[in-house]
Image 1: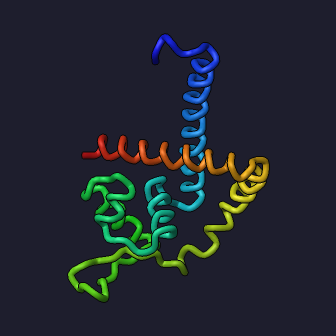
Image 2: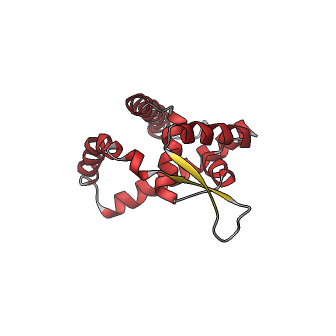
Length: 156
């Protein structure tokens, strides 16, 4: 950090760093608790989230989006398949490709556990103008990209 910055900016940057760490800890603890309720590890739960948001993916695509090594992804898919939460299916256009898709029948009721938190976030968003939401979205998107890059650096 440069010595030429104002005390206010220095204080804000320190507070932002601490708030980011606190937010990260809260997210990890929330997803750990949610995973325990669902009988899943946090990586398993977040992989299901990826598949819900992005649709069926190959193991390589899961690895890319999650920043995980191929061997880790294979074991992860094996665990999810053993719990009947996902299935491997052949790509209809290229039979050599295997796609991982969610078994939605098995996930019935899972989303209800997330509803109170999602509703609380909706109430929080109401406090902000559209311009403020745009700024928050920009920050979160950029910070997420940095975190994904840091994850890739750790796993490759």
